[in-house]
Length: 250
Image 1: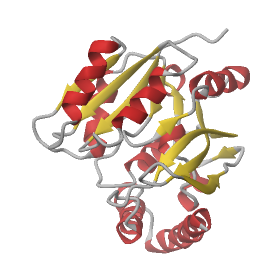
Image 2: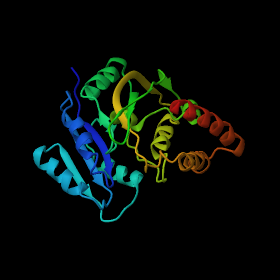
Image 3: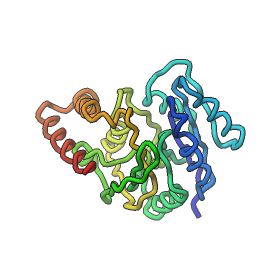
Image 4: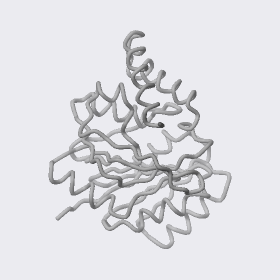
């Protein structure tokens, strides 16, 4: 039997159009021992009011409102600081989980005694239309492999905090999730992939990842400023990252 509280980390910024779908996908999980920790990053829409409605319906949902905009990485870290679960999972405020996501992935972790796992996922448009692309994942990813292929979808990750220890996301504009995975894998851990679609990524036009030039620039900064790679190492990894990123979109 699977046991253990799952702390679900979510940041929200002007996400009122998508929050209902994201939050309901957590409420509808077949695995019920979870807490959803939402840090609102000073939204200007009615995100806070919407989230408050859910906190009154389900005590497992907790809202933390920031009085100034600090960015997604710092907002996620705020939720991480409040987390009390054995397991840490991530879900963005515009993405969706399948109903069996937690149950299936936690069983996969327990069966194999894994500390860090991720899964395949599919995509929908901003309007919720199903896109044909499915992002399949490898059986495992090491530090050096992740440098060359940012294949780990943040919305699919579950980490056993008892095994990994405490962690925070690096404070950079984008690619902070990849920065976190790299910091964990650099310590000798391996991320294990479950090649089953358990989550749905929403392609939103104004997101950082939707702006390919900006995303690429942030990956370059991650290599140079956070991972401290040499120019030659950065060029090598960046070329492979660009190739694999293009392949994911085709």
